[in-house]
Image (cartoon, rainbow, N blue to C red):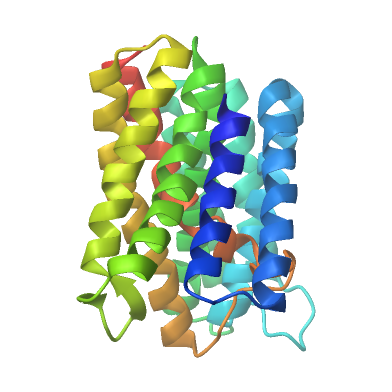
Length: 290
């Protein structure tokens, strides 16, 4: 079912592109990459367990690298340095805590990450500034911790169904918002930060995500109203995640975080909304469905 929904979303997007005469090579590249991403998501999330755990860890490390490069912690012409390395170690430490510790005790891992970063800061002073340390810790939280909730959601009792709500909310909302915005969008939502996004598109994205959630509930066997609420909240949060990633790029004067995914950019470009949605879906699922 989820496979049909995601491919249907791609087909609708393609149809809108034809209607608006907006087909070009870059869009076709983006479409093909999108199909490949869907296939990989189905494979990795379907398997779950250690496969998904290590895939999410690698994804997090790549995302942190892209963020560090964008914010100057890893200048492109410089080799790996101590603060950057400590940030990557922090991500690994947190991921270990996900399977070794439980619940509130995972906070210990984050406290350890902060202590490690502050130790580098004080014992190498004045090599790094406080801004560098704060951004290094922010990378661990923003990318590493938040993306880990893909795995954590999958490992819930009914996680094999609930985890797909993350992608229905993020990618589904994005696709619906794009289609509605292209067809009837007139009023700009954030003209300076993202000129192409419209209020009409945002409303269409949220309603589309809610509809996808309701349809998916009949397959997953969960309460339709809970799935609708989860997708509405998730859709709203996904827009914040998308705009937040755009704001960072604007501040840093870059177009994309990377070039890993043809037509999409880097991990941070493609998973910007997923990063925000994943923890929200986890906690909403625990509260409303599990």
